[in-house]
Image (cartoon, rainbow, N blue to C red; front, side):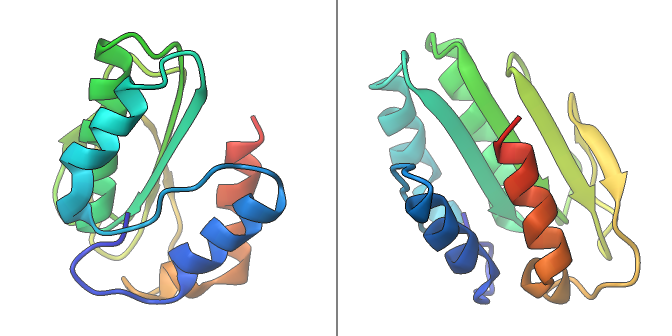
Amino acid sequence: MNGLFVGTGLATIAGRLRERGYIVAYGSYRQDRAFAADACAHPTDRIVVIGHSFGAEAAARVATQAAACGAHDVTMIGVDPAAPSEVRGVSHAINFVGEYRGTIAGAQNIPVPGYTHMGVMESPAVQERILSEVSQ
């Protein structure tokens, strides 16, 4: 899920995941309720929720709701949330802490210094790290 401002980084990741055979729903943090409902409708599928900025905060909410409604294999990946958030009940949660320094309780928070808030999603190195987390 994108945040308030949209770059090309998440679209690139979505395309790479599609190439790997994943079914991808891509959009805005404002669609978090629809994404959570879709995840809850597929509790036996592997659910991966990725978000940047406000989208990272929304990703934590979506992943928590998916786990609460019975999804057993939920991964949440946040990137530079604008505010502290929390994720609960998921299989794997990671947050790349960037310029805004937002953390996600319940996730492994990994600093990625040296990037602007938007630049962190555009970085091929960070994109590769995100894709490697999806594979875990």
